[in-house]
Image 1: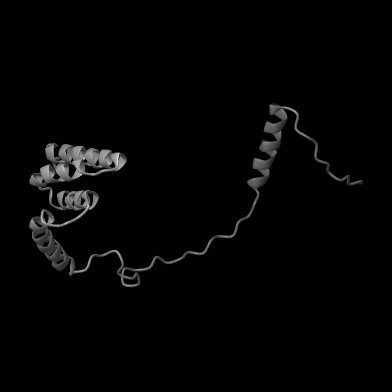
Image 2 (image 1 turned 135 degrees about the horizontal axis):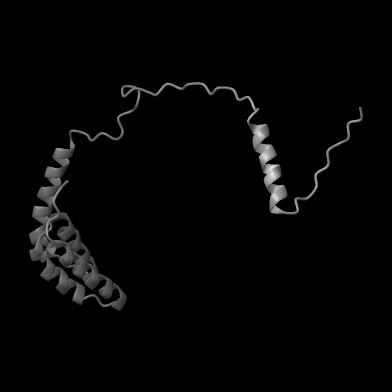
Length: 140
């Protein structure tokens, strides 16, 4: 019996391609794979405590609240460039949701010399007003 080497011929149409693929899928059904080893899942005592918050968060939040309270009256007295003053007001607004800071932040934004930066600051004021004016979303 003569064994002739199998030559690869280009596939000319969709039907021939379908036949070739059907042959491949039939051959793949006869493949024997080794079972992958089962890797045990680490228990919580084996996983480092990276994600869980520390008990010190309440201390940090208390310090943050105090710092924000202390910073609020100082901002008006600070001798800062309008951009920096606006950024400070924006930080305070976003940290405290204090609507009374909108007017001084708006004034600081109006005093920014660079038109592009002033436009961005004014847009930030609008976003903050929209956020603070939106009705509270019920928690689910």
